[in-house]
Amino acid sequence: MTSEGWGTPPVEPISQHYIVCGGNALAHRLVLELVEHYEVPVVVLVADRTRDHAPRIERITGVAAVVEYPNITEEALRAVSIDTARGLALVEGSDQENIHAALSAQGHNPNIRIVFRMFNQRLGENIERLLRNGAALSGSATAAPAFAAAALGRPNSVEVGGRYLHIAFDDAITSDRLCVVADRIDRQDLSTIRLLPEQEGDSAQFVRLAQEFGDDGPVRPGGVRREPGPGAGPDAEAAPAAEAEVEPGLEAEPEPEPEAEVESRPGPGAAKPPGGTAALQAMRMEPREPTNWTRRLRWRVLDTMRFFTSARMRLVLLTALAAVLLAFAALWYLSRDFGWTVYISLLDLAGAAQPDQQADIAAGTGTGGGWQRAAQVVITLCGITFAPVATAIVVEVLGSGRRGLPRNPSAGTRDHVIVVGLGNVGTRVAVQLHEMGVPVVCMERDPQARGIATARALGIPVVLGDGPFEEQLRRARLKHARSLVAVSGDDATNLEAALEARHGNPDVRVTVRLFDDNFAGHFYKTLDNAASRSVSYLAAPAFAAALMGSEVRGTLSVFRHVLLIAELTVEDGSGLIGLNRHDLEDPGGVRVIAVRFARSNQLHWGFADRTRRLAPGDRIVVAATRSGLARLNTVLVEEG
Image (tube, rainbow, N blue to C red):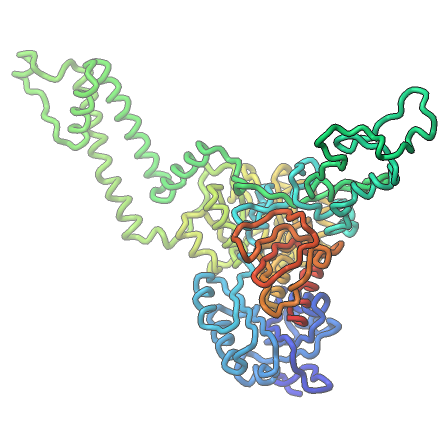
C-alpha cells in the first residue's frame, strides 16, 4: 500500500474497534492501556510511521492496524473505519485540529465515543457541549499537579466530595487511613512494589476469635479472654459459654473497629511485608505550601518592583525614599508635632511648600531652625525626583512594551523552583507553583515555546538561550534554589539538567520527567531527594477510562506506579447493578473508598456494609490500578 493507505491491513473488515490518532508518547501509552488492560481491538492513525513512537506502536502485540496519513482528513477517517468504531481518541495535534477531527468523526458516526486532548480546557468544555458523546482532557493538566507536588516534596492530592485524597508513606500514615495502596516499597528495586495488596476483610478479627476460643471459649465484655484462675487445669479454658461472666445489658461480642484498622492488620503469625508501605488518606483541607506568609509577601512585593522597574531605577527610588524618611524623622524630632510634620512633608514632596522669607526668620515666624530647613530641602528635591521616575515607569511599561520581553531572574531570587522546559507540562507546572505563591524561574531554549507568553504575562523570570546547562543554571540562581523540575520532551535532556543541577547544588531537590522505565529505575537508585514522573504514564489511564465512559477524578503516584481515583455511576442497564463490595473489590485491582446512594447526596467514606447491592442512581468512588479500573469498565461495557 502507499503511505496514505493501510500500514498493516486487518485480515477481515474491522468493527467495534477503538481508534487512536497520534504517534507521540501519550498515544503509545494509551494503545498499551487499551490492548493490555481493556483487551479491545485498536487501530492507530499516525502522520509518519518512521518518526516518534510510531515504530514502537507498530510492534505492540494486539494492534489491529497502523495507518499513515499526514492529516486527519475525511479520507483518513474512512480508512480507519470510523463508521463502525466504538471510540476515537485524538491525542496529538493542535487544539484546532483536534476540534475539527472530533466534529468530523461525529458526522460519520453520531454514537461514537470521542476523547480529545485540549490544552485550552475552557475551550474544551465548550466543545464538549457540541458533541453527543465526547470528553475533552488535558494530559498536561492531569500530570502537572503530580510534578508540582513532587517539586515541593509534598503529597499530590485529588479532591473528592470536599476531601483531599493523597498518598502517605510509612511514618506519615495515620490511623484514619482509607486503605493500604502499596507495600514492599524498595527504592533500589521498584519492581517489588505491590499495588493494592491483598488485605484482611472486615470479619477477619471475628474469625480469629472464633478460631482462638472455639465453640465454648470463655469471653467477657469487650471480647477479652478470661485468664484461668490459679490452679486451673487444662479443662478450665473449655468451660461452657453459659458460665461466662457477662455484665447485664452488655454484649459479649467484641466491638467492631474501623475498616482501616482491620484492613491493614496482619493475621496471626503473619510476617510484616518487607519494605515500605503506602496508604490512601483523606484530609479536610488541601495541603498548603509551607512557605511562611511573610516570605511570600516580601517576594511578591520585590518581584512586582522588579517587573515594573529596572535595577538602576530601583536604586534611585530606594535612595530617594531613604532620604525622605530620614528628613521626615529629623522634622518630627525637631518639631515634636507628628501631624504638622506629615503636612509639611507632603507639601514639600509635591513641590508646594513656601520657603521662609528673611522677614519671617527675623520675626521668628519661620518653620524652624537650619536643620528643619535642610530636611525640607531634601524632601523637596526627592519629590522632584519621584515625578520623572514615576513617569518613566509608566512609559516603560505601557509605551515600550516591557510585558513583551521575558525578564531575567534578579540577584535577590531565593528559595525558588527552577522549571526546565516551557512546553505544555512545564507551563502548567510553572503556573501552578506561581499561584501557590512559590517563586519560580523558568529555563527554555526555544524563544517561540508555548509557555513564553504565559510567563511574560505572569511576570515569571525566564532564562532564554541555548548555552551549556551549567551556565543556564547559574543564571537561574541554582545556588539559592530549593528544587528543580525538568519537564522537557526529551528524557536525556531532563536527566542531564537534573545531574548538572545536583552537581551545582547537592541539596537541591530534583524532579524529572522520564518516559523510559529503565531510566527511571537507575535514576531512583542513583539520586536521593529526587522524584521521577511520566506524563504519558499519568495521563494515559485517564484517557483510556474516559474512552470507556468512566469519570477519573485524578491520578496519584506511588513512585513510577499510578493509582486512579474514579467515580462510577450505576445507571439503568449497567453491569454494576446488583454487585456489592465483595464483587467489586479484588487484590491488586480495586478498593471501594466511598459510596453515594441515589436517595441522598451524602458521600459515605469507608462504607462498612460489604453486602449491600448497588442500585440505579448509586455512585461509587474507587481507588484502582489500571487493570482494576479496566475490569470495572469491561463490566460496564459488556453488561451495560
